[in-house]
Image (cartoon, rainbow, N blue to C red; front, side, top):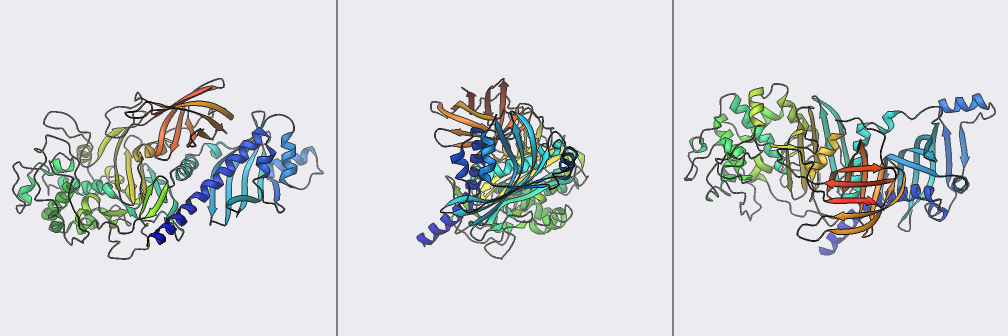
Length: 600
């Protein structure tokens, strides 16, 4: 069995590494053009004859014919060595690749991307490029190159090519997938009640290469709490549930507690309920009341209202209150009154151990960049309301429509998104289920994240912009997933400017902040092609840098996407990346950076 599991992990890891290796070929290719390194660039091609065809697009071809009507063919055949010998001559040449898409099966690959070719810092031509590759002795080799061409002097590259938020989002996630080695990820973004982007990345089933789609279902983990909270809010606005009434009045069978506990306190994690359930079985709990038995006899860990103590069992209690006030099972009420009206058709309970579901993503562990399948997943029937649902990002962003379309009335929406207070007067930055926070630029965001075996999930709602974003993965991923979502959503809030990093290779000195240790100082370099740059340290760690707007950049690491501010002065530049967490009452822009660098 151990050998079999090792083989599965190795097979899964090879599938993830292929895209990373192909991405490295792209980086070497761009760098070799700039450095005019023929040995490096020739090593990227297969030994057999390689097709090399460039095709002028119609507008540029017509302009060429106006100057020379003998050039009737729009295509140009060549070979990579002849092409590169021309590159070797004359002044600085550079090429930028962006919007890269890679499809591979471990033996062959198709790579497509937009490109722009530069002479002495000025864009010369641009277009779409297609590579076919094969794997030879564990190395990916190019076997054909076909590309379109438009001359910048004749027809300028449309701004949409490099200023399309959706393409930047896709670029950022492609880089994140390569850096993190996540098996699969799904994303959805809505704006003003309309879905504007939804896409799957990686695999729902790595071993069988089943891709993630927008219909792939993932564990919600604790994001289930905001779905349950919406049900609680709906009952409260209909006067069927009194948020300030003791739950013991709804549930008289509960063991005696020294203090009364309200539904409002449970929804804000100030009810004194433990998070530790000490559950050591993996049985199926048929009812909510059965699930209560896992923890209900435990004493309170604090007087309600005195402390903030995050509690998933508190939401199991809330689901019991829902059942009592509606005379329906929690699951029936959720489906009939929340999921169906909000068209959350792919949200359900996680019954993977009891019922086959072809849309379910498999569950994986992710540790030190290596993935392995979860062999005996937890039965989550004891905590449906707090962490036992499955869903899709499209469904999760649909939930936020309830807060604008009148499904939840404005007065109740305001209550949901207002911070509760402890008896001391301290605000918890949690309303009814939702966490209240600020992004790096001070934008208000309501959010909730979750993590458990085989899952990392987040939903963020930006009320002023009416933007919602949800990310779901099929691995327990130690990550700053809230900040990752913020940076992706940021692309829809700004218009990209063109003053990114200067193109070229730059030596840097980096300082990495270590908790309880001395700062780590390392040498490294940045390979910049303006749109998508790579920061490589002497210890081998790599990070991606993608320009967003002005001096704001996305800093892409194994643990997520962070805010990076870069200051440029001539060819000298410096950067500071900030990590800031959640439940913030003000912008974290003044937080100490966890990563700094400057050119030498």
